[in-house]
Amino acid sequence: MHNNKKRPGQRYHHAAAPTLALSLLLPGAAVQAEFLDDAKGTLTLRNFYIHRNFVDDSATRSKAEEWTQSFIFDLQSGYTEGPVGFGIDMLGLWSVKLDGGRGTSGTQLLPVDKDGDPADQFGRLALAGKLRFSKTEVKAGEWSPVLPILRSDDGR
Image (cartoon, rainbow, N blue to C red; front, top):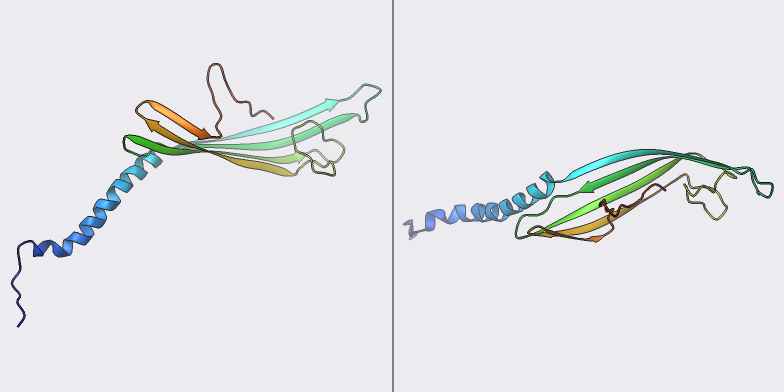
């Protein structure tokens, strides 16, 4: 014979697994929400043109000339919730050569290969991890400070 009589607490047995799953997911959603909601990003476009005219009689060439379009993508995440918050910042730099053929390099705007030709495009990705406790923030990795007495220069 099978006993269909329910014991105390048995009626919650089927709801326990979904409740446990939701309780584990909701804190993660809150952490993710602040991490993403407080994130901000900027895309800066810069157009560089450099023309150097060499007029000295001892110059080996008459000019150095290069023209590029650069893209600077700066993404800063928010922090995870909790007494210690964690985050990540990303800086993407990419530049495309618009003009500057063989024999006109030398402005230091574009890297050159072993044959002396300027690169058609180049770039890199820089990451920094960050940690916040109370009002104190610590960053490790690559970052571009913008302070009254110190500022990074991404001009060239």
